[in-house]
Structure formats: structure tokens, C-alpha cells
Image (cartoon, rainbow, N blue to C red):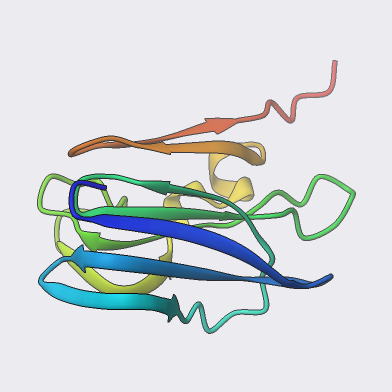
Length: 127
């Protein structure tokens, strides 16, 4: 991000910790600080925007359950993905609009830019 750096550190075989350093949404972390997810998810990707962060968990199972995308930080331009009424989050929050059953497939990649976010969804159609 513009004023922060995000990291994913494997903790054990079933989980990973998201950490960041710097200033995000008015909070300054002068040393590496763990961001609590409050969910037993293994984080496999992280992306930093100007003032927001995205995290992608691995799939729930091998049967195409898909990963969960979370976001936090500033979202005044919709980059958090939680709709127009939620413009900031201080902790990671699941983006319900990107759950596999809503988008029709598993989110396989995430990206964050200055004031935007993106996700790539794998097709779940069976022909």
C-alpha cells in the first residue's frame, strides 16, 4: 500500500497469520502487527491497495468449495466490497458478495490498486 506493507506468514499446516506494518486507515503500526481474522482460515494470498488490504483463504475442501475473500481498511470508493454503507473496517471482514455460491465459482486470485480491488473467479460450469 501507499503507507503500509502486508505479509502472510505460515503459522502451521492449517493456518496462517496476516501481519502488517505502517499506517492504514489512521492506525500506525510501528512494528509488525498481527491482524486477527477471527476465523480458522488458511490465508494463501494478500493484496494491498492504497489504504486497504485484501486476503484470500484457501478452499474449504477439495470439492470446489472455493476460498473466502476478506478486506479491511478504508473503502470510501467501494474498494472493500461491502457495499456503500460500509466505508471502513479495522479488522478483516468476509466479502459476502464474493462467496463461491454467490459468484458461481471459487475466487482464485485477488488484486488491490490505489482505490480499487479485483477478484478472478474460476468457472464452475460443467459442460
